View 1 (spheres, rainbow, N blue to C red):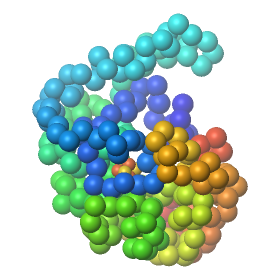
View 2: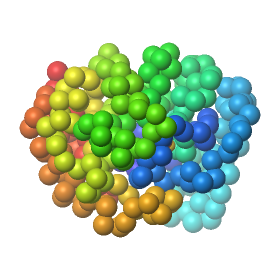
View 3: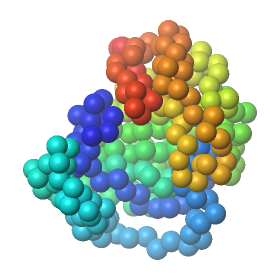
View 4: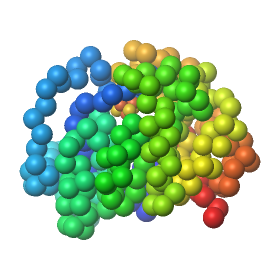
Length: 260
Ligand code: SF4
């Protein structure tokens, strides 16, 4: 189980991690994907095609686990995993570039899946049309200058990210802050002011992990310790109407919740 089980009750083994596109308009230093191998052209699948592939590719992703059944991967959990109930739409691209994203989410919802949508917030018009169970928008800087340096967007989308954050107060939502030591781990009061204005239901402050292609851009030392993430989260909480709800030391993540 990952921390989303601990925080939100999501059964991790029944959660499909998927992306409807590999394209993105940012080049975040901490991203685990490879910008170098981003496909130049993509053919969009219909939502029905994506839905019909869920079981097949979930099974493929789980290949091998049934050979190591133990106290964690029990026979029962293995069988449950083959029948997923949750879809996390994120992973290796910005989902709002998929033109049929609202229809895809509606389709998943209609089939009884719990949907999480994770976006970098640069496409507020598309987000307004989407109705996932929980909407995530990233906030990886306290100000425009840091945003341009850390997320390296193709244009100046700071105002558009703020517009997306403003939408979150009226829905079940979470803001994700990826804290990179030495790059964006300052000015907690300014982060707090942005959170306060958004009114998002939850805020996840998570330490950067030295993984994937991000290792070509950052150093292991850019990973904050859990105690450092917690200290930062405490300062954020002290400056706005959010309180610490829970934390997961292994994933170096703190979740805050709106008090109103
Ligand atoms: S917005 Fe997400 S997918 Fe795009 S570069 Fe940043 S972390 Fe990677």
